[in-house]
Image (cartoon, rainbow, N blue to C red):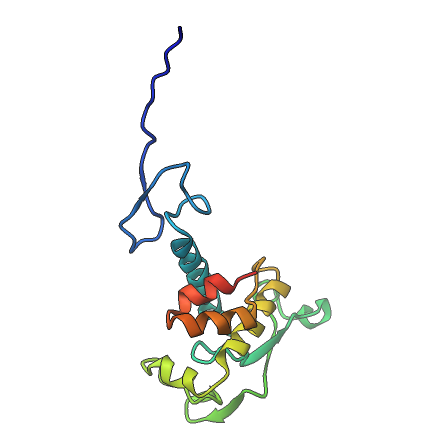
Length: 171
């Protein structure tokens, strides 16, 4: 007769910082999360941070404010070694910006970074622009997933939580 020692699985904290739930290796979602909701929230937060840190997009309404044209070898020629290596590209304003007292300003009106972005988003089809911005990040090779705009709209009907809705709409 053989015997089997049952050892309880080790428990770990959920990888989502504000979650206080525990998980076991066998119940983990997406590797380090305790639930689908935590995994979706983390994925949505990561995409929103990528867009916020990309200076091409308006953080308030997600419109693309400028496009960047990568410099050719000829454009870099004659600029000196350090300048040529540091040269990222030429920036061009899109139709979503106007010249204002603070320089190039998004047409959504969000110049003040302390402005409540929910007010701006209520006036624009931000979910559409969010989908465009996510697809641009995929085209640039910075992300592997983009927002499904129809799914995002459905999720936003269910909750006002943008991070969670974005995470659930990623494909």
